[in-house]
Length: 114
Length: 113
Image: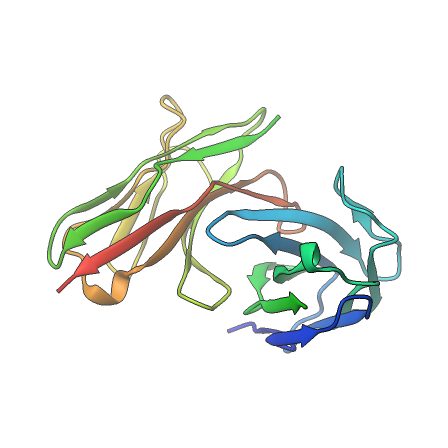
């Protein structure tokens, strides 16, 4: 079946650094990708929706300058957390959908900012 | 706006017990409904779905029926196993697969041997 790969699965970094998370669709063309954030023991909250080749649409309350999303190809989207701080620590999950493909989720990235 | 409300957990059952996790939704149109499962430390896996009223989704012994009259999509399983321990999310989506998914708060299920 279709697979979405997310990398890295776990990252620890110092406060003030920027972190890039990749989301790849391995066997289908993902025209739309979604980025979610999940706090411990809570649900997934949609951060933004990105369509290949265009700017991402951010949900209300999500800082677009803080969370940079790029979807330059039909198989790759990236989320960059800029100048990360401890409050950005969370579990980030991407999903991808394409023509005749339901949304498939990645395994998530656990981000810990020290 | 659209929303999903599901039974709060945690839910703890003994192996082979009957499981029900309640889920109700609010939507302006005719959404597709989903149950996702998240095992510890992992992403989400689609467990089952239903796209129109009276449809029944089923997978791995789990079932849920799309009830438009009660706006519900309750998850059931006749005999749970320890391996079913996970967090279960009810969700809805309106439109195509490119539409955003709205999740419920999740229900943590623990099964005792």
